[in-house]
Image (cartoon, rainbow, N blue to C red; front, side, top):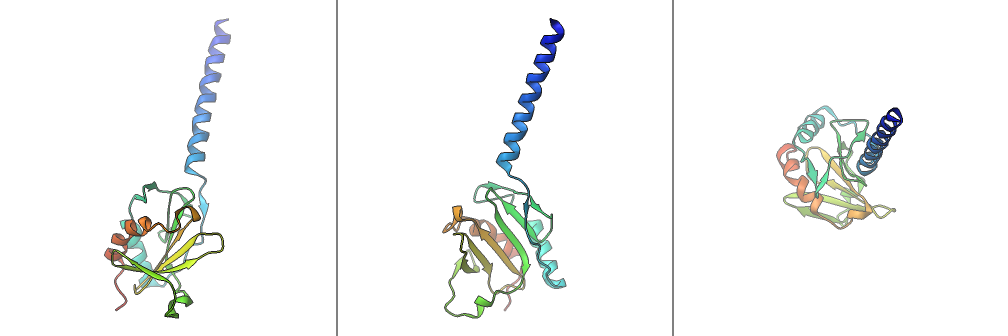
Length: 159
């Protein structure tokens, strides 16, 4: 009888631990596959500096692991707000009528995506930083506010 109780208690404890682990993994979300940019050498220096200076939370959201891990990408929340540094200059930046916004001294080109998300890319910087806001955060400048200080500090103006 004692052996059965011990087995039952161990089984219950194991199930509880596995359930807690499953809830944690579900809440954090699986590592998300994100294309890694291939910046030129100078942009890579700026991007690595940005990566070291990024905030631990954006819009109140904690870090979200992206795969492959890279100094040129970062993510927060689930669905993830994704930052990619060293992306090519979007062609839309040549269009004077393109939508843009300035948040805390950093200019951003705004590109609406077909799925309701937004892609925002820094303007007039020596390395281009792209932030994808999932539909859930569309229209919210909080993430850009949280990222502006690190961008201004690490990536000089183009001018």
